[in-house]
Image (cartoon, rainbow, N blue to C red; front, side, top):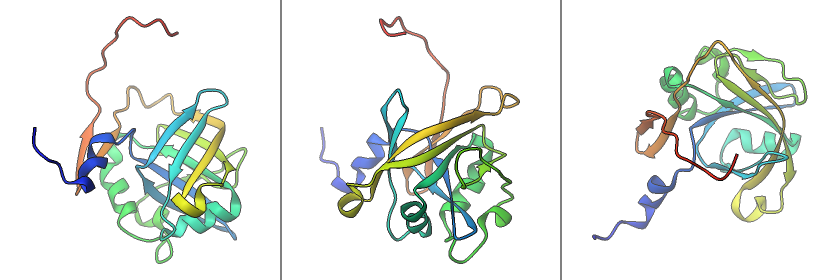
Length: 176
């Protein structure tokens, strides 16, 4: 074994795919890239996410209490990185990165048509926002695009490195 610098620990524990988060506040929609999220409950589906208060979307999520988590497939990787490398305070990211906003049914934030799944969410717990920028979201409506068969997600490993989902394996489980 050899010592690993502590700032590299997150590269080992990234829990899920890179996602896009849309918000809408004061009549303006925005989209940001997010990697720091995880499921915390099955039913109702609850998601924990960390969003830096330096992000333009942070204020919108805090004020509106709503967002959409849009899950992009590998084919959108360059757009996802582009979205993450600029601020919605300065640019309309939907237009710049050719992403199509679509109306959601339960929240004001838009769905993203190009993503294979969209999760409409409401903030249900802000207690850890002041200390950790941690929001607990309840998924109130979920959408999938049946035209996108077997999409592969991307997973951030830091410094511009991403892994892409590989082959699926099935193992016997006592859980349904």
